[in-house]
Image (cartoon, rainbow, N blue to C red):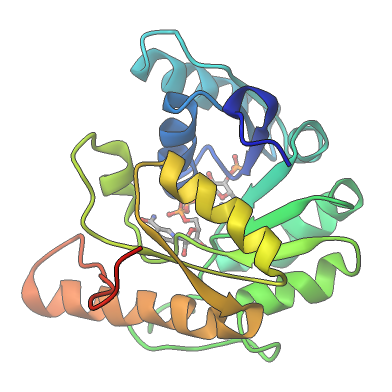
Length: 224
Ligand SMILES: NC(=O)c1ccc[n+]([C@@H]2O[C@H](COP(=O)([O-])OP(=O)(O)OC[C@H]3O[C@@H](n4cnc5c(N)ncnc54)[C@H](OP(=O)(O)O)[C@@H]3O)[C@@H](O)[C@H]2O)c1
């Protein structure tokens, strides 16, 4: 896969929402070609226009239906609520063969969103792998970064842990972490996604207890 942002395109499914729009903004700013996906292509176009305007009209960004966005991209990023996770994946899985899927979803189960509750597969990312099947590399990343930080231009202190089905796929996602202006760490196989996803509930609990909105994590004692 190419190192050049110009040759790599990214689909952000659910990029009309908070987290996806933040990631689309960061990557569009870095020069990647972005395809925002939505259940409603008009909603996706409006979100693409909004991000483009945030970047002074300079961005390569467009809005499409989820399947068309996935088809158009080399890397597909999933940013939908867990309640929509399975249906969204089923609707695009035929477009994912030979690509990397980056699952940002957290299996939050309201009302107890500050309690870690994992699905039977072990984590949302492992469930995604079961749904998309062979021929798709699946990674998990960005679960611990708030959308507020992504949409802010300030430097982000919080690190990003990346798990995935191969070292090579994790390496590609770590390049996207860096392109987004963040520090990433290879956190091992997809089975470790339970930690990334579970940490989100812990951080939500910390935010509630200490009156913050952007609690995050940082790896110490090692230089990248
Ligand atoms: N927000 C954060 O700061 C944050 C941080 C880390 C991780 N996450 C995770 O990232 C994922 C997205 O979070 P978010 O806060 O961006 O969510 P959101 O804004 O509520 O929703 C994102 C998008 O999901 C799509 N969607 C598809 N099916 C849906 C359904 N049945 N109900 C509602 N929306 C549906 C919608 O897009 P269309 O209507 O255009 O299809 C919506 O714009 C979640 O799994 C969350 O846990 C969020």
